[in-house]
Length: 125
Picture 1 (tube, rainbow, N blue to C red):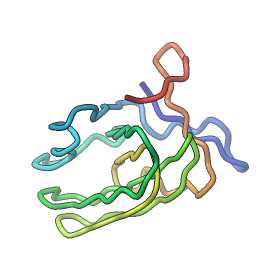
Picture 2 (tube, one colour):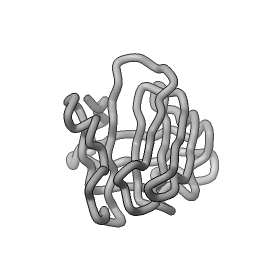
Picture 3 (cartoon, helix red, strand yellow):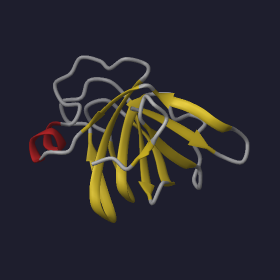
């Protein structure tokens, strides 16, 4: 799977090509904790059933990340979270964690598309 950003200024920018989906209680609870680093093209996607306020913490994550909150495919919040002490909150039915800097061009209102390797759009989860 890969993540592609669509916006008024750039259509079809790929922001991640190595994507994991945190679709179990354990994988959601663990997130990126205890990892030393993540690849530059990596994304961890957290799909949720309904849109609501979602909080991320950086406890036991020793590197900065970009976090993107998405509702119905549209970006509702983008935040850079500091290592070990960062906290971020946004509203969405999907949250994506990326390496710091990967979401530098992502803006509120952009659309994020989740594509299979064959190019088919999928809904994570």
